[in-house]
Length: 505
Image 1 (cartoon, one colour):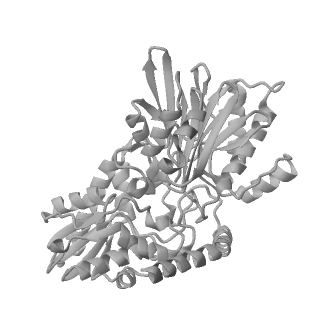
Image 2 (tube, rainbow, N blue to C red):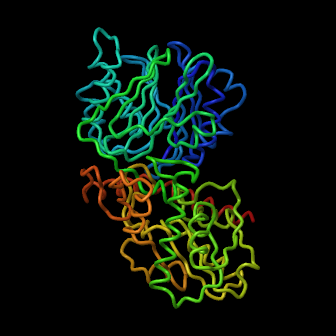
Image 3 (cartoon, rainbow, N blue to C red):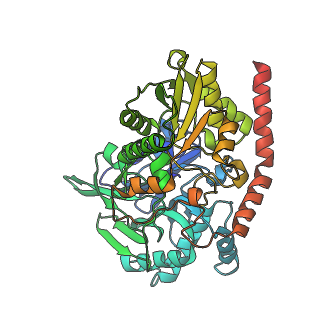
């Protein structure tokens, strides 16, 4: 779930792109990069870490130009930080081309072989984004007439990308000397929205992963990029759009609404915040129907993304709502950290309990979801250490039982606490007196209610149904084996680091 930005403006865009990345920082803290275009000349700076750590004043001064793309990276397959995989990526043939990508290709291995053996293109990293870049470059070359591009030929190239690439992808790219290209996969899994700003010098356009970036930067939201659609804005600010995939259908990732997106974003016409309020209401209704015997004294959210659901749940059940945990905002999201020991340690650094809210009470803890269960287990233990009499745990999302292969770091079934376990077994595993999960039907209804035109969602991590139709058991076994082999040394190093830190203390 990386964050991407693309802009065609009338003035320098380096500060604009930097500010936009800060707004999208929640979508990835692994690496960040900006490329600007000054005529046909690209200027690039990227590196590992948070946006504020990657860019210095001297870096910003070199990022000249009135158009550009930017990216904040989230590792989509549990991969550790690698300088070679920071985005945007660049190729110089047949046109200077830079690309930033959010999502994950499910046929990248096949494409990498095709690029090398048929298209005579070399991919130098394990990133599927570099594969996507080279597929686009090849299709642009095949579509161009006398090595010249028109909007029509650019859209033909995107159609070629759709024919070859499988999986989830939202893309922003710049073609040197031509302009900005953005497109979304034919299933519309990962979000992409564009807006405009009227200035005295003409119209500026901004494309982003979430509408909140447009709001924060003063752009008017126009609409979401449709599944399979491409938009192209040339250097003069002329806007073109075309559907480039037959039979495209909208299947937005439902986990965006549960956890990934900022609550102040609107994705495919659906308010993330309002969705989370509705999730709390549905969860409250389920508790009243099936768990009325629970003697709940107080409702406490696990900050931050579960707050709207917890607040609405407490409202609907006429229960006190309290903030029982204080969050350290300088610790990254725990389910993307590489080592289990590091992950457990970071939970205690990330959250601290307010003892008076727990002592002698039966508390209902509300979280947006339970993935590995590490955080949940530590939080339940913290509640008990703070004096809670009984600890009930509610998840505003259904059990996460299946890996996500479309850009979220949940690729192995044996890492998911709900896989192969009943609700009672999971409750025992995390130490809760009672565990309550949202139903998938209720979650889907909550999201769909805000835009009835969205009839289907990508919900594979809950349902095991993969909308692209190409994800087999053999495919899942393969990527899980690859992950286990590739991450063994990373896991060992992370666990050793945790032991070293404890020894120092």
